[in-house]
Length: 418
Ligand SMILES: Cc1ncc(COP(=O)(O)O)c(C=O)c1O
Image 1 (spheres, protein in one colour):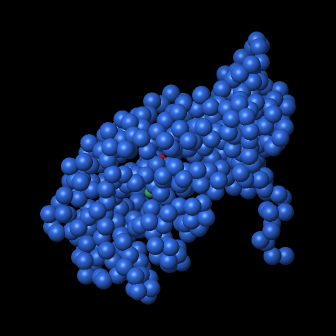
Image 2 (image 1 turned 90 degrees about the horizontal axis):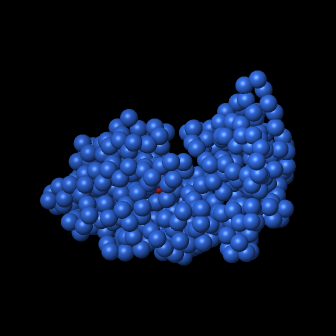
Image 3 (image 1 turned 30 degrees about the vertical axis):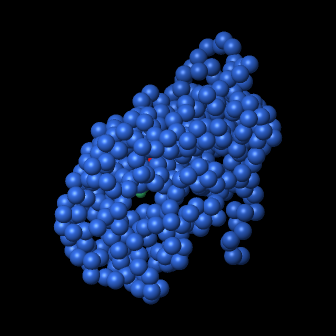
């Protein structure tokens, strides 16, 4: 994994993305804007592929983390398949050049049309999470005269030691199937000519920085796979999901090679083809959110720095209490440091991007950057308060390319009927 510091760095007192000063980008594309570094993306893609080179592995990028077509094209071009959770993500991925036979369809509530589209596309497999979903896939595959490849997503009841809102490996969450629920489903698959069991898998959560739960889940899945194989079930794939964390603040996540070593060591004895579904680890540190200070307001308790980005552009702080490092684009010398709360213009007290950050109080017009916004940044953006979504810009060397335009106000109501 590259350190974003290498691709987003201060040169001559001004933050750059690769060779482009962020001040220049702000003039060219306005603010707020997501700025991606192509070098960071390429280095991450190559690094992850290299880490798993010693074992047959299909890395399927979790499109939910970052779904821009141009960037997806780079990721698929680098050898990644796709991990999807909706028909929209399927269409996006196909448009961006994903190979259908490298697509896995995950998700807790797949709908008929989505399953049908995936069958038509000829995807690698469905990660099945509920008995009713298996019935639906069988019916739709039958109607098409097809045999659907399915992998059962197991809930291993493992605590991923991450934020509760993104932990998915415990029985208290809606995800996966408890091991005890598998026998009737395996019988069902065995009897149905329109279903084929190709694997099992799990995904225990996101932003996991402790390798142990990932290792435990891998070992548990390998034990289960071996048990099923002894019963005569033919498996090809073991899907261990995504979840590898990145450094937002002081976290020390496992490196790609430590992560790969842990999974491969667990999976190798099974001989199964490994699938992983990385999202955040591949793109999290490839982008920053560039924003401008609108003004400053001091109350008896706080210094509020009001910026033009808001929770609709970056929901993670509001939703999960997440930390994103915030810095001025142009470093100012001297001055007293105070605690600053960076907030957006949205009419919610929960609309904040960073709280209690010690720095010189910025002034109206200053540019700021929020780091590590490449994952679950633009892809979770909304138009709340009728705010057009911010553009996405890809920087390579000394040039930039707008890969998603700033949304126009007219697009906000284009689908409304009046
Ligand atoms: C099934 C599945 N796979 C992969 C991912 C990607 O996770 P991450 O971005 O943490 O790698 C998610 C995200 O929650 C997921 O639900």
